[in-house]
Length: 175
Image (cartoon, rainbow, N blue to C red; front, side):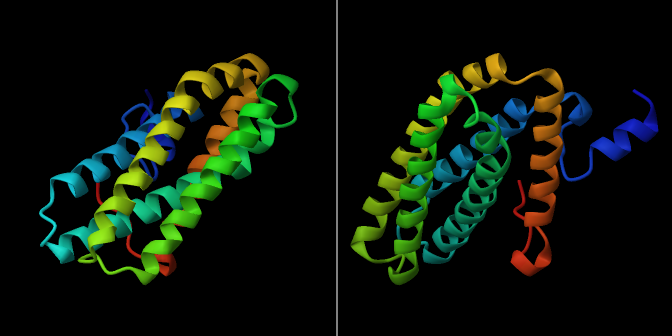
């Protein structure tokens, strides 16, 4: 790959073949990152309040940027088509449930006994959504979107993620 192509396409990502990635691969990378963060929360001691707060902040930011990008670019493109429309509407609702649950953490201390239960429920909701998306929605999207549409959605989503990570929204998540 010529150097100028790689440097332009790798902005904001650590994947060596960013120019060849599709929205589906980018979303799967995001999904894996969130799974990793939930796993770290699960393995952290409940008494390590500072670590749990930091990990939850990372989960919150990852999910916020990811869900907003999916809704703006992928879901908007898919809801125009008959076959994936019902699945997209369900995905919007799953996002809303996750956003509402995330909002309840603002008034709950990490050392509150309900915090662990809430994080488990959030993890289950997110995992269910990820599995449906990867198994069903991605398949439908590949059927109804052409190569150019997929590439455009990929570019828009990646740009959105870079913009969503600006210092005004907090420090970028290491990962």
